[in-house]
Image (cartoon, rainbow, N blue to C red):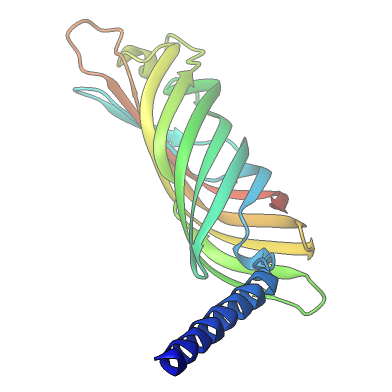
Length: 230
């Protein structure tokens, strides 16, 4: 009986010692290393400025439709891009634009403002160099609401006759842009895009009983700016 008791005690001591040794080894294991920063998939913020060129504007009422060419315009934007996968990201952009159009006797729009917020899905192809620089080419598809501030500076032309007048209107926009991001430093780079943006605007008619005046126009846009990877 005494021999069995000693044998059992030795087994318990051996198991306890092994468990304590394993616990000590586990406690001494270093923590897993943090995931290294990756510029290709880092969140980035940007600021861009640019111009719009070419394009036509059309205005419609219940009974009349008129059109004109759009003068060169300017725009400025702030945005953020969040990569969800190596080849896809989502972003948000706030943009201000100024535009105008003039055809004597038909449509006279002085410098008018657009304020827009866009959701921007992007399909992208990023790559890196061993020295830390990284790049991306892709296609962005902005879409969202528009706030329009129309300045109709000639109340005797056809645009005024169909009910359009100075004031605020609502609308939306949609576009497609090809873009390049070139990070010449790991966290700082230059961004450029070119493409097409179209705007659909509705302004309350000054003529009682008529529906809103619809104004829509599109332009080719070119923008350049700076971008920072967080």
